[in-house]
Length: 94
Image 1 (tube, one colour):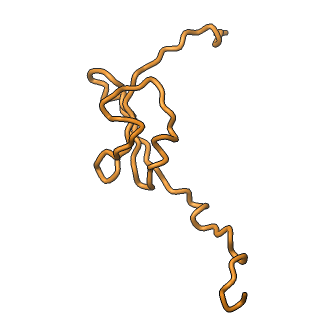
Image 2 (cartoon, helix red, strand yellow):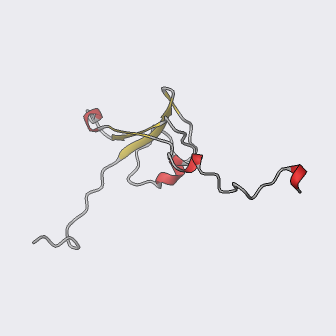
Image 3 (tube, one colour):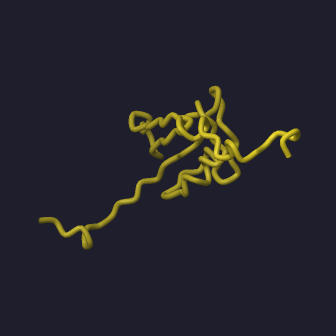
């Protein structure tokens, strides 16, 4: 059995960026040209829209084969649910 607490953790530098309609979305938190070892995804995803793609590339030569692309989807439940249904009355009924 492997002791996970004593196992060494290897960090791998990577690039992460958001693409919309084929162009990189300019996010202040991250610049496409700088590799990172870790990042808070919410900093990047707060500017994401449905249909965007989140690209994750390993840093280094010939690492394009390790690219991961995550498509951002809209939550199918939240946009259809109206939390204020029946609470808001028309002006005539006030």
